[in-house]
Length: 219
Image 1 (cartoon, rainbow, N blue to C red):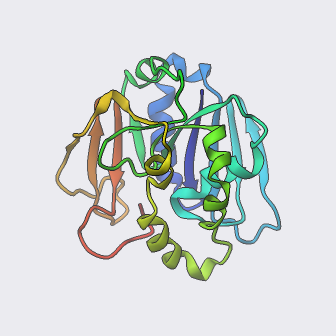
Image 2: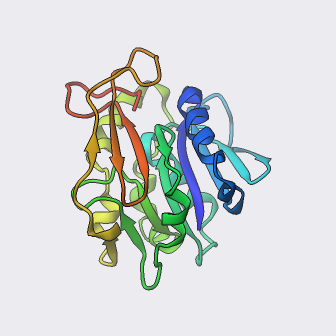
């Protein structure tokens, strides 16, 4: 299984924080990691850079939480036997994350949510299920920098669409709860976030859009 991190060119602080937590464990080197970075509208095409076990993919679109999934649909469609754990740069892993990730049974599975109620697109995807939903994913692709908030609203409403429409979807350990903190300026960037914790995968999500009002691009 590969790890895919959905990111944005303005998300350096969050991405560095996530990678720091991932590098703390030696299992980090056992995984190929794809970091898909949106927001490079000035580029004429996708640019790819390899650094150790990390592949950076710089995208000339900003499709919010779907940027990475769109990239998998466009660039990796032939990898039909591959599985991915998909997460956002505004996450942090705990010491047991890799152990729990490697223990996931992928037998007869095409996708896995981390929570029954909502997963924020976070979870396991097979390349086959991504290919099956390619048309849906491409409909979420935003190549216009002036339409980022419009796509933020549209794509927010479409969260977990693949999970919810995959007849072979499972929920990791059938989990329907989580722990969360009170709002705090977690990254010291002026954006209030709650920290949600998912013990079934030992994952923290620093969430800016948690029902406090208008959506923000800083998610």
